[in-house]
Length: 249
Length: 249
Image 1 (cartoon, rainbow over the protein chains, first blue to last red):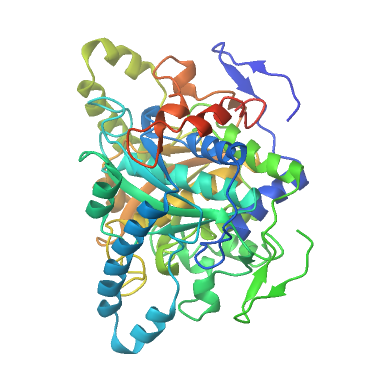
Image 2 (tube, rainbow over the protein chains, first blue to last red; image 1 turned 180 degrees about the vertical axis):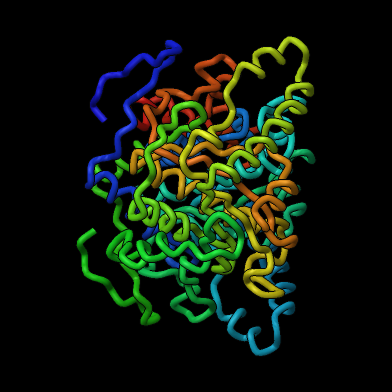
């Protein structure tokens, strides 16, 4: 990482492509493995601006289709606005509960699924499909590539926050149209993620839904196909058996 | 990172929520800042199974709506299949070029936008909206939450690969229906990302599209709103001015 820049054949700035040092590699895997969706563990302490600036800068370094950078971030701290969003959540969550089979409803209702009012900061992340102009490089043949870029920004935000000891919870049980009205978001802008953000009293060692018996982790080998859908990838699956990312991931 | 597990009040495994050590935090930011969309810098050397297993495990540790883990990964190495996909790209790219304003077309055509045949490994990443059952926790009120989970897995894959010195390029200039036929992907499964993956002769110091004058990086302060859409977030924007993630990000 301390090597000098090498001019590429085209005269562009091309940096050496070596792997990170072992401890740096481990740090990246530690962030990935210990990142959690935080709902009930937020502390009220505010996040200082320098830390928040680093996390937002990490989000802004996400890949984006045609370098369109379609994301925007609305920082919501006002208790009144958070209360409004919490009500939008409550309405949606009541509807959601009724959709589950009867024997799952009590378990669903017992889960805490958001920290809108307890996290000191909410961040609404949106996507502007018009950001790159009428035709965006890379967005001509697949729908929703701007949304994908914005989700990459959210995942960068989440991992950077974990490294800073800051918890993030993504709340999707919301009527996006009502949230857009509450935050003054223009019609053509799409709501992608509503994040609760704050210091935490801890991160769960394993995903909370797994620990609470809602669902289990799928064995990864079942999700890897060799050359064609449905053909098991035996060699890689064997290697998976010896892979552990971090001590408590 | 070496603290003992603390049982939480609910008896669940809750780990201390401290920030990473400074060097570990820097490593996470280094991965985020130096990750690039790689198109023309792939080397033919194969990726060993242990490295690939770590990168896939990182992807599998992405957040997912209701812990649905909707992703699948098809590993494509066969030159014949990659040739087929390269043809699907070529057709789409010709159509794409014609959509740009005339004065932009020559510049577009000069860009190398994929490494399908030169990268030794292609990974097709898909999303199964039925994975979590008929009703998925968190997927009841916003469309496409399964896609968002799968994109988080792709971003984890990308960052882990960067830490391993492996380059990734996301190709979106493809007719997804034709790619699904070529890889035998069932109708109800959605194609999210088609990735070219391999060792590289280097990573560009800044995004290639920026260096080649296609688009510039938007100042992040313009994308941050305070409480309500359109209100500048002055304090955080001031902090942004002093923020640099990594030496060559």
